[in-house]
Image (tube, rainbow, N blue to C red; front, side, top):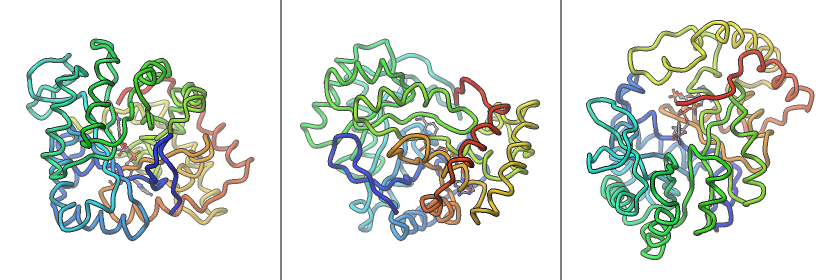
Amino acid sequence: MKYQKLGKTDLEASVVSFGAWGIGGGSVWPDMALGVPEVERLLDAATDLGINYIDTAPVYGTGASEELLGQALKGGRRDKFLLQTKCSLNWRNDGGNFHYQRDGYTVNNDTSARAVRQDVEDSLRRMQTDYLDLIVVHYVCGSWPVEETMSALQQLIKEGKIRAVGLSNSKPADLREYEKYGTVALVQEQYSLLAPYHGMDYFPAVRESGATFQVYGALEEGFLTAPDYVDRTFPQGDVRGKLPWIHEPIKGNIHKLFEVMEPLTKKYGCSYANLVQAWTLRQYPNLNLLTGFRRVETMQDTCRALDICLADEDVQLLSEAAKPAQVTELDK
Ligand SMILES: NC(=O)c1ccc[n+]([C@@H]2O[C@H](COP(=O)([O-])OP(=O)(O)OC[C@H]3O[C@@H](n4cnc5c(N)ncnc54)[C@H](OP(=O)(O)O)[C@@H]3O)[C@@H](O)[C@H]2O)c1
C-alpha cells in the first residue's frame, strides 16, 4: 500500500480508500445484501491490505452503510481507520432544499449550521464512535452562507468531534470560498476515463490550495471492469441503470475501448479495472483512489493497480480510445 497526507492535515491515508456506498444496499445497490459479518470481513481484508481509510455518507442506504460500519468497527477495529462521512443530505424533514426521493424517504440538502451539527451527531450515533476523522460536505449548496457552514465545522473540530473537512460535488470557486473560513483537506469529486472533464477543470484549483483530490467513480460503478458489464440490465432504481453507458452510441464505443484495453491487460498482466485505475492515478499527482467494494476480491485486485506503471504511450492510447465514449457532464 502507498500512503499520502490528506491536504495540509497530518492525517496519513492509504491511497486506495474504501467506498462504502454499495454496502448500504437499498434500491441503488440492490444486487448484494451485506450483513455485519460480511462488513467485518471487508474491514479485516482492508487492514491486511494496508487500507486505513473508509468513506461513507448518512444517505448511503439511508443510514444502513453507517450503521453496518458502526457494528463492524466495534471490537477493536475503529482505531485502525480514518473514518470519513458526510453532511448536508438528510431525511429528517426539518428543512433544506429537496434533493431526491428514494426508498420511501425524502432527502433534503441543508448546509445550515444547525443541520450540519445535527448530521454529525447522527453519524456519531449510527457509527458508535465519539469522533469522525473527516466530514465532507456532500453537496455544496448556495442557500446558506459558506461562512455559516464552515464556522459550524470549525467549531466541531474544536470540540474534538471531527478532525478535518472536505467538499464534494463542488467547483473550484466553492473550494476558494470555503478556504476563506478554514482548511479544506480534500475535495471528493467524480472523475473517470469516461467523464474526465470536471476533474481536469478542478486540478489547477487543488494544486493551488494543497487539498487532496479524491476521485470517486473511477470504475464507473463497475462499467469499466469488464466488457460484459456494459451489456447488463439493472432493476428499477439501480444507480447503474441511470448511467449514460447503457445507451448507444456510448455503449458501443465503450466496447471499442475494451478492445483497445484487451492487449494492454496482457502486456501488464492485470485486470481491466487495474488498467483504468493505473490510468487514473497518472492523471494528477497524489490522487486518492476512492473505490467502492462489496467483495474482498475486488479490494485485493484494486490494490494491485498501485504497482502498475503504464508507459506514457499507453496512457495516451487509453485517453484517445476513450474519447468517443466520453460525456462532458455526469450527474450521479
Ligand atoms: N460524493 C459523492 O457524491 C459520491 C458519489 C458516488 C460515490 N461516492 C463514493 O465513492 C465510492 C466509489 O464510487 P462507486 O462505488 O460509486 O463506484 P466505483 O468505485 O467506480 O465502482 C464500484 C464498483 O466497482 C467494482 N470494483 C471495484 N474494484 C474492482 C476491481 N478491481 N475489479 C472489478 N470490479 C471492481 C465494485 O465491485 P463489488 O461491489 O463487487 O466489490 C463496485 O461494484 C462510493 O462507494 C462512495 O463512497 C461519492
